[in-house]
Image 1 (tube, rainbow, N blue to C red):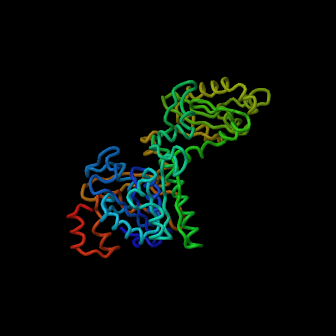
Image 2: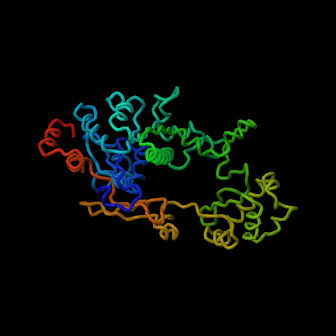
Image 3: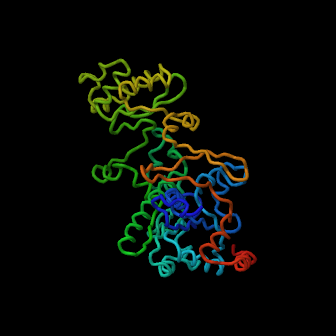
Length: 406
């Protein structure tokens, strides 16, 4: 797989080196690869990326997480702790457009591969640097993980039941994916700048900042009024009511969101109780918020008297915003996911396995992304890349292998 194999894709001709580990920065490289970039996954010859061992093992030995998240990449093994490995890496940098890394600040500099060095080799290089706290500030040398970023960035404090233990908001790796996405945006902006000026730059992305950026009015509400938002459990009642999760008769759950009076009137119609939406009862948001416990109890009792499908059917008939709380089994059976082709079945070579993974997004009308291969075997493309890009012959490659550089 090379960029040339997908010439219609918008990032065809862009070469990305992914020297990062696990999810955050590698996710940026994955997104770029889905839209045509040639992504070289540079890994240590022994063990490779730790993501290969994170999650459920496949028959091949690598995990399903690796097969899904390292899609469309070519694996090249290079030991960056050795001078010969550094020399090879620099040659690849000279022929690349983007470098994604997520080591602690100073690590690449220690190996002689810091920004100043690489920028001199390739002035047009764009370098994504993902860390827990960024390249500057008093916390920059602290290790960063998504769970910690959720805490520091402010969303973990909000997740959970009132006065209960704060919980992880969704996936423990949510902050990694968020930062990879922001990193991808930064890389695309830098590529656009390079088109105009020819100059590269580095993108400094911090896990906690990506999390903090998604906290709506948390900062202005505190800055202006000293409001500290607390945990509300499944119902966020600061702005709208009802606005939460409600159990149904068959042991399932639905999400209902009535952010306006008109939407609450639709819900009242769905419940067969249009009188609830009159101005003398709960027709105005202000009144509903003042009596949020009573309103939520009414909605909870109604949902609890019907099955999930019955609740949703009535909501859909009246245009009430509602949806099921899907587990993954529900998602596999969901018509919307199938209509949008959100699930893709891909064969794993040499194993007979078929892996179902999330498809590429966003969906472009003329140049949609593509999933050309799952995560590669460790070092699967080392010879191919060194000979193709650097012009090394068999003897040179054999010498590097003998020295355990690759």
